[in-house]
Length: 384
Image 1 (cartoon, one colour):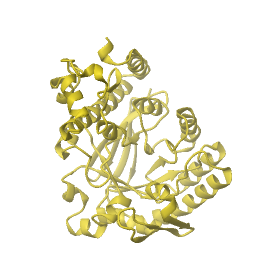
Image 2: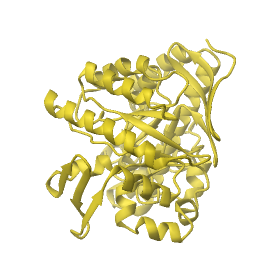
Image 3: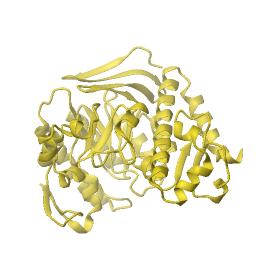
Image 4: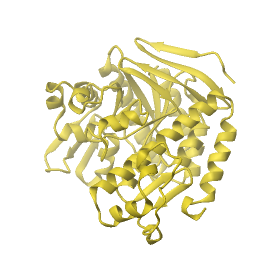
């Protein structure tokens, strides 16, 4: 177990590993606007807001960083407009670090609305059908206009399963775009750009991508193209394949992941950062996450249950409102229900990350993982 901090510095950006247990590690990524304690879960604020949450709530839950999306913000309200209004931090009132994804994943999902070539992608807006061009340079320019603290390279993400030919072509293109993105980023004090490992579910392609990106000396590295249709076992295998080929002293970000079980398993394999729409999306659809697993508030058995969702939760919404009331709000499709359940879910995710950080620091992560999974296996707290 590492006890003395291990730090790497790039300009005003540094990453310190404070402790390790096996492959799991805890530390901090220091950026110009503040530090991000790792492992970290980044709430997703796609269009400049974490859906159904006030910005102060998100901060109070313990989130150090949130995510914004280049594709959505470039279309509405527009990167130039956000820049003219002081940047995304001023615009949204979030003063901590922001990571922006490059737009590549969203463009992938627009298969019928896009045309890809070696220089970039041309696509039609899903909002109004207007035509747009996204290149590695333009993606970095947009993220810079937004005043992002962590900029992601533009990449091509393919859904799984796909053929080796398609996966390798996308991986090679993403490597080319990584070089162009890093060149376009230049030097931005206090900010970082991350490269993205691609290669689908093919180990040798993942290794080739990781090694090529490592030679480019990015301040941080993401693993992309997972949680796109493959089983969890495949995702975890790819993490294990890639991890030894990424610089140990740089932060590692698993994009778009995931469930609480995905998080704890990925942390045990050396991942430092995560984002996912799951907790907020689930909250808008009547599903709550708790220390005893998932609770479907649409279920009729909650209709006359006066107990709180979890009296031991750090979140007032989980402690102070009855299951019957949360069930009623969900069935009535009331906005307050969506807000309360989103609050509950993000609180649980942040508590889980804080628990993992403390457990790694104290050398008890294996025990923490086992007990957490045991609680999940016991099932819905309402059955206890």
